[in-house]
Length: 95
Image (tube, rainbow, N blue to C red; front, side, top):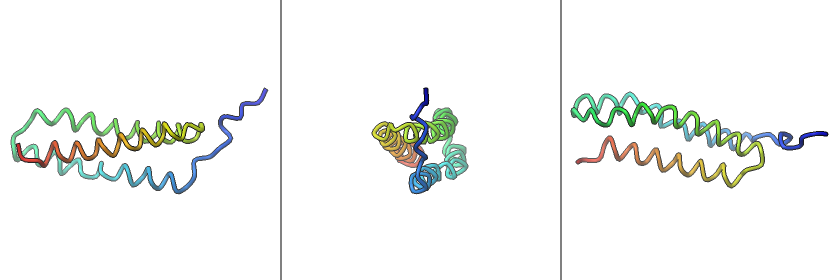
């Protein structure tokens, strides 16, 4: 009995989109520096949970696309984009 679920590969263009989606992680040192200068220490746990969320979310998005769950992959991708926007607003928006 052969399992045909794993036959489809994730296309290169989707990997490029996923890698571009993880680039906001490069802003984490800026986020941490902004928190240190403004003194809002309550924001720090959100940043530390943001890093594994994006890494695990990217891996799960690739797996969903690979196992022919393309709609779920796009939903996870959209949620990560919304999370990037929320983190940016959390750190840089004036309170």
